[in-house]
Image 1 (cartoon, rainbow, N blue to C red):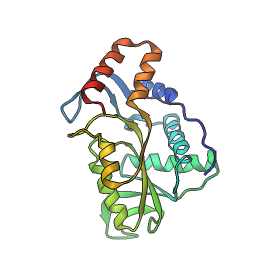
Image 2: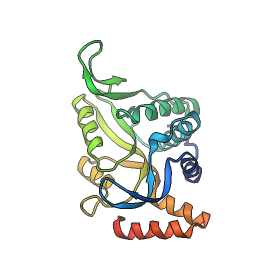
Image 3: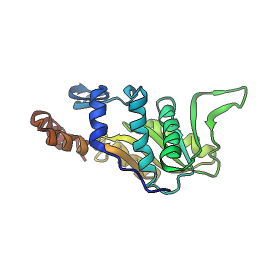
Image 4: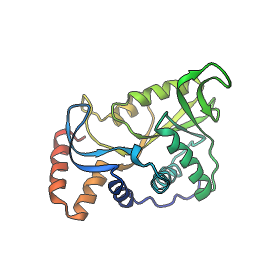
Length: 216
């Protein structure tokens, strides 16, 4: 693919903070852990924010091999993958087919759970916001493999870099179990670097405590 445009993690973090996508504070996660930050990519819900996210995904994909189809899991991944396909074409001169899945299969029209480009025999990259437990990604991988796809990898917005139930992170578990690469636009370390640059030592200390307790 073409030479990648530079993705600026700090600019993305600042935009995420300004939109409330990223918050520092005290948040109880579904796991019961009390996290010093929270990330909700669903709030990247206007043109500027979606453009910046898609530019990050597109730049990262230009560094990857075997990008024959890109795929967005329903529902949150659908606008992400569509915007990324547009950005790859406009900014990188690469026209990549894209598709997504339905939550419920249709029994009329084109039918099925897959919409968009055919994935049969294609190397497919999955685009999503985060991998928390890995359940959703595993489900999508099964759907794609049943349709004849070869899973090339997964690209997410944030890697929390924290342990799951065992010593591995959810991303590491997915990589190990499915034998595919998983890349992220930003990581917990990027968030800590940002706080250090900004001089927010209180928030940084809470992040460090959390990393020591749950980090990989």
